[in-house]
Length: 406
Image (cartoon, rainbow, N blue to C red):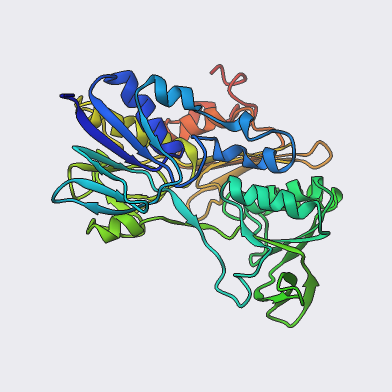
């Protein structure tokens, strides 16, 4: 009989499995590991769903860990199973098919759920989110049969969905409540450049438009979209990309503390010290992160403690977004909007398709927004994160790391 401790991981996504990978490198023989995944697939790179939608990659291309990897490490992978209950007293996980798995340590990596606008018609056939392989398959199938696609949401996922559907020949309109695209990642100038470039590629944008209802056709499938002002546009496919919410239902059901995410300490432990949580389901110091870099930083710390090293601390992340929308490189980090007590240095080359904005407070770089040329993004993040005095570098900052002798 095995003397190993039992680790159960709820969630077969990027954060949970990255934690397992880190753990295996630190303490490969410490646990018998069971992983529950709600999807029928092995672990895949969710960030690369957009190239799959656009036909540039296949599902096989974006798999991170195949079945052999799980088998090689003795990991019991239970796919297509949804964990419905955690008995914290008996320390047993229960799944919807009746499977039970006892644990000594439990890792919650339940991710997030796409937010679907609560408008009439949101449950119609032809209304999808853009979150997983199943959604992508529905969009690809629709693109082969229908013409008009409407994407609700002018953030990164919305623009990637719109671009992929346009590549597949659909007539695509992007509806956005805000006044600018990617308004969480770009300032006004960079956003305007992006819009011009995407419009030149055939995308249509309806900014400051509020969706009131999704209209059904005679066949029960989506036929049109109606706005608050009464205007209607045709829609054979509606993609909702209006944000995500941490998936905390399981944590709430088993009595863990939840406040805009599963609340964790700097060691990624919940209020039950045997239960850890990482990824988009987590709230750490009041912040939930939806980008990959912070999730991987969390994974490293959680693995350190699961391996009984006990020396890692997660103190939060300086968020940066390195994006690529249809071949356009974008980057932002820190307080790129600026404001009181900050000054901005900008470079705008509209002919060359390059825009750079650096935000400085005192003698420290606090934010950066880059469009078209993102080569120095990582350097700017280091300067922001380390709080480095940039007084001596000020004249070379815009020219980049090589010019500054970095």
